[in-house]
Structure formats: C-alpha cells, structure tokens
Amino acid sequence: MSESNLSRNTSLFARPVVPVASVDDAETTAGAVLPRIAAVGGELLALHVVEKAGGAPDKASVEQREEVAAEAFSVVRELADEAGVDVTTRIAYGTDIADTILDVASDEDASAVVFTPRGGSKVVQWLTGNVALSLVENADRPVVSLPDPKPGR
Image 1 (cartoon, rainbow, N blue to C red):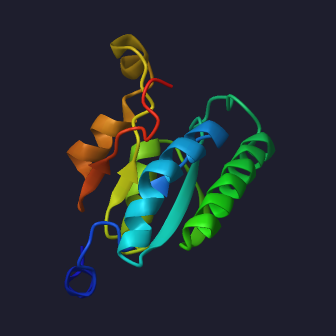
Image 2: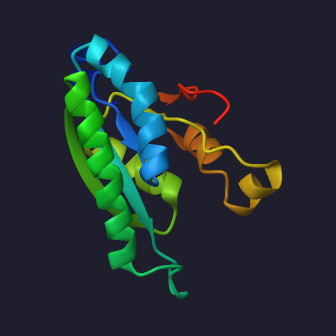
C-alpha cells in the first residue's frame, strides 16, 4: 500500500475492494460490510472476477458471467444506496481469482480486501483452490474476513 493511502485512510473500510461472486454473495457481503463502510464515510469498490480457463474451454460464456456480475452489482448498488455509501463496480478477467482480486486492489489503491467466506467443506475448498487462503497468503494489504450478518444461512 502506498504511503499516500496509509496516511489518507484511517480505516480498513475507507475504500475496500469487495469481491462478489453472485447475487446471494452480494447480499451477504454487502450486508456485512456496508455498515462498517458507512460508519467511516468510506466508499465501496465491488468487484466481480470472470475466471478464464487459460486455454481450456470456459465453464460459461463471458456474456453469461457478465450478466451474473450485473445482477450482483444491482444488489450491491441498492443496498449501498440504502446505507448512504458510494459504490463503484468493476469486472476483471483472469485465470486466478485471488491474484486478479489482489491486482485490482493494488491498481485501485484499496484500503483492504473485504469478503465473507463462501463456506463449503474442506474438499470443496481444496477443489476450488481456496481463494480466501490464497488472498491471505499473497496480499500486499490487509485482508478482512467478515462473518455472515445472518448466521445459519
């Protein structure tokens, strides 16, 4: 994180990058992070990563994934408006989700990367590459994992 960002931002929630993977994820993550961002007068950068297969066939078309992003961003914008938080959205493309999130955080000089864990068994996490673990291990800025604001979902 640059010196200007360190001195300018007194909170991890001043300008976080918040990855959202789906409408459900957007609802959960926005519900957890927006009160914290509003409390410090911060702004939200919602990010959707379209994972590219790197030479292999993609799981879904880019257009289908961009539609998922648009729907998730719509939810984030609505909840951010209710919370009085400014929101910017961005779609990024990459072969590694965690690396792409961290690249965007760096490009945008984000105060932190903030997410809610997506859950799943250890086997599911292993098969999906465990993006959360990769974020924490490779980050150049704080990574904040927030609890689901509605436990038991």
